[in-house]
Amino acid sequence: MLKVDFGGCSSFVKDAEYQEYLDKALSALDVLENESGAGNDFLGWKHLPTQTPETLIADCEAIRDSWKSKGVDLVVVIGIGGSYLGAKCAVEALSHSFAKQLAAKKDAPEVVFAGNNLSEEYIAELIDLMAERNVAAVVISKSGTTTEPAVAFRLIKQHIEARYGAKEAAERIVAVTDAHKGALKSLSTQEGYRTFVIEDNVGGRFSVLTPVGILPIVLAGFDMRAMLKGAAEMERLTAERSRTNPAVEYAAMRNLLYGKGKKIEILVSYNPKLQYLGEWWKQLFGESEGKDGKGIFPASVNFTTDLHSMGQYIQDGERILMETVVSVEKSNRSVTISDDPQNLDGLNFLTGKHVEECNAMAELGTKLAHIDGGVPQLSVSIEKIDEYNLGALFYFFEKSCGVSAYILGVNPFNQPGVEAYKKNMFALLGKPGYEAQAKALHERLGK
Ligand code: PA5
Image (cartoon, rainbow, N blue to C red; front, top):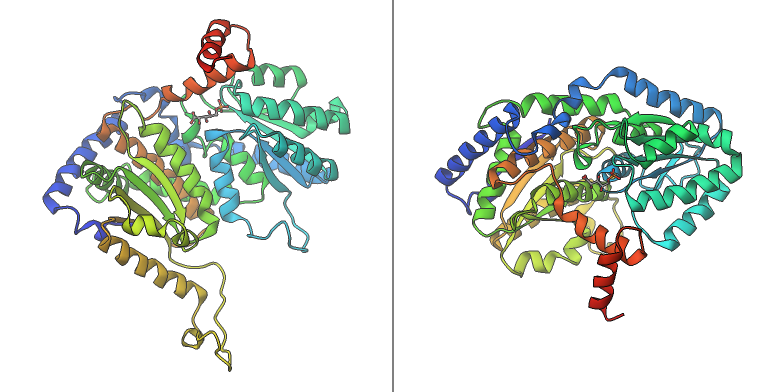
């Protein structure tokens, strides 16, 4: 099970200070558990692991099986932000690193993502790929009105309809959206798409354990029941009013360090499969805490890769950093380093060692070096990368985020700051209703 360890912070904080922050974290936990804090109408995520009905997973599996019977080998999942990052994280973490290149026939379709950018090249190249494959699509948008997925979906829908006809297209497109409102809901009703609902009380970045994550993860061939089981274990553990509740401990320590000037928290992993855990985590904490002029800035790196790019700054740059290392205790694969009689590379001292042992020593050595360099180390460890542990990580970070934001004194569940760019973009693109803003922006830009 997931464990936290803050031994790597002991030279930066006094125990009395930590105890004080644990008290603050426990009060914040009370607010979250009593549902009495800001944004308390968005707490539907808290009991998803234990309250997700079996029928939801069975419905996702039915879609997986019906697409399999049609020979679908490419599923395009369209969404952005919270409607993208959780599924992307799970698919990256759980897939074979070279799944696309492996010759062996796969049981599950390849899952690719779209609608998470506005790049013309990306969408054109995706359509090139779709043209060669047997395609289905999942379009995910809670609001049903987000520009990036809506633009991508318009193009992908047209491609699928042109290839298979409107009736068959409706069999190959599933929508995940609000129960009643939004353009995607109206479109789905009109076209007869199967739909899954994102409940009103779950915000985008807390939605990985709703159909937003469940459907793509099931379609990609992974065990959603095991993921919910890992999350359920965390739901139980992190509800306890205890000084050893890992979410309380993590929220307390990161806020204590923030108060000491550690304004940036870097999520570190030593396995490239966890790169998108960093992306998901950045959205979760960045959008939840970065408001009212406050909040730890979330960043992420993958070591040892980024030790050769970001290592210098982390060791020696401005001392405003803390690191949270997601450690994986056991590798799922086994490769030992072989002997070389010539030993020209001088590496025979490693003969017989597992590659992961080198990784573990790199992790330990880096930890000590970074502590010496003034970077506190928070550790979150899991046994191995699998569905169960990923579910535990998702829930652990969600709960920690809620507690942490309440310690900070912000509403974790709104995101007023993301509207500014959208309004400017709509005005510059000539959306009806934005004429005055367009005029002001053009004057400002001198055209
Ligand atoms: O966390 C959030 O609320 C956002 O990141 C949303 O998930 C993102 O903007 C996508 O929104 P929607 O699902 O409404 O298209």
